[in-house]
Picture 1 (cartoon, rainbow, N blue to C red):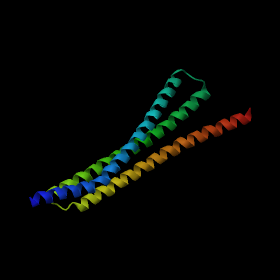
Picture 2: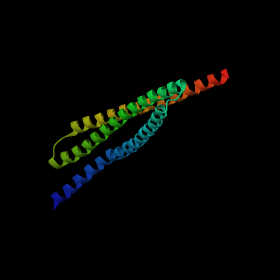
Picture 3: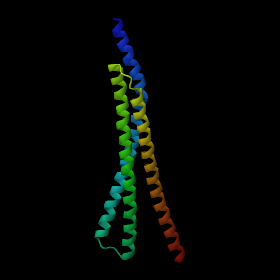
Picture 4: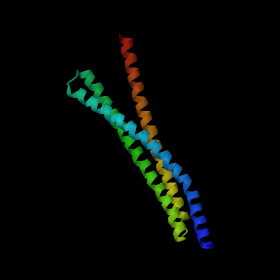
Length: 157
């Protein structure tokens, strides 16, 4: 009976250790939802502009639409990288949790691989957040450039 109690205690300790990575999974999962929504909006906007181009707009409007498409393409690329890196983070965290249970069950010291996996997960998250920040900067700079262009056009009239 003592061994059963020790086994239950060991599993309880592993579950306690796995709680923090599981919260991290939830947080990064929420971030993935935000990124997926941003990508969907970029794609929707791209389709609207694509239809606008098909209608043979005037040259100035066509140039402006093409510039917007280029900006949207850059943003989509950054969001794609952010999503890929955040998914990599999620997978690495899942491996951390699995390694915790495997190490406890097989009584193997996996502390170094677990540490390495966790550091890799954090690096992937940092890179993903950096791509997200870059995408936001691209969106903001494009909006600011449109505002400057509109202000110049307003001054000329």
